[in-house]
Image 1 (cartoon, rainbow, N blue to C red):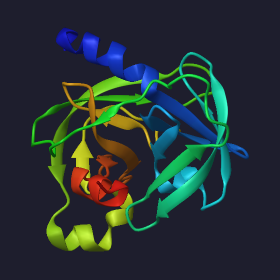
Image 2 (spheres, helix red, strand yellow):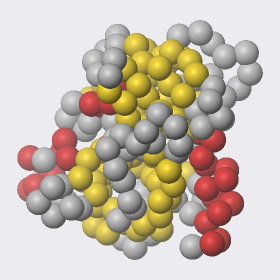
Image 3 (cartoon, rainbow, N blue to C red):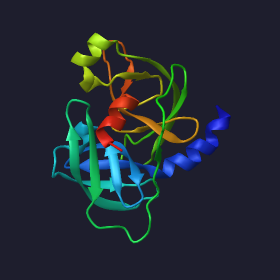
Length: 188
């Protein structure tokens, strides 16, 4: 896993903490002008303003502009355009495959960002996927904790392939949004 250190160093600056009221989660900057992607339940509802914080301590307010409760994904847009481009991550052009290595960057406190590594371990079967999309269709083994909802899952090239959405308390399986659902929501 030591070969993933350059991936972590290049991807981590684009990770963010998303905080609203007394709740917080994680997310990722996907456009240098201040577009952020996170779990839908982290974003609140359309029009909700959140405080977004980068690992270097840079803070800004962003408003939820798009939300899908079905897929548990949301987009936030910075309220005041930043004076310089923000660190942002690239979305992967292809879906991950079973066994692919992942890097997860999330924030479970108001201080440090945590990095964990894991693999794609599977997907929900088609019948369960239709009924439990809110739990996420991608299974992964990267360590997560409270506050990791919306944390980006990066591939070995540092591209976002998913966001962590939840975990199944019955099986302890970590769950993420499928790449297909993520790309369908964001659009071309």
